[in-house]
Length: 281
Image (tube, rainbow, N blue to C red; front, side, top):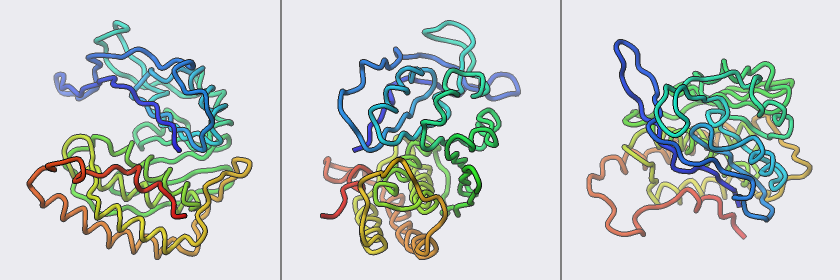
């Protein structure tokens, strides 16, 4: 079961003169190591807005989990101004932060194409697998000794809220199903595209999730729920192209969901991506 850490820190986008930038309007308290549950997990997701995942908290996550996936924005954002409110958001080089020493113990580090220069992909890829999301161009994976481009899925962007989180959730689900990192990134791209086609916090149609689950059940003969020595397969497998084709067909359900104007009337009409991670017996 994945361990997620993402409190309600709020950062809003504002327009100042001719430039657009991010400005913090409120910040929650950091997540401390003692806030994490005292149990073991297969995967940990360190997903924050900025500053709330402390270095010592990430280090404890690494000890609790067999493999940790990290969103770079939680590590490279800094603020000018008061600690509890106000201040422009700026990026700092990952190598200059206390998180850099932890990279060899991180399995995957995700960054957007705008964040990638601050991550230092060529340096970071020698320590962990770096995933750079490129919007309509899909994503690229970089690891020590190789790289791969993963094709996108068509989407009409309405609101980018939650796209990065949805990518990581889809990617982690693919790993739980035993996919290679490159194949799992297809699921990341799929759910990232589905997220940007709706306004606000993303929700996914149950029929679409069921279709994706059936695709995985057909493609993956023996789902792997364990990580052996934190060793991953990075290259695309023989099922990659067929998996991409099948997911494109399932993406039609996203369009149907967007066309449905009536909101959900009960909790049964809204489905969480967590349902996708339940493996067949």
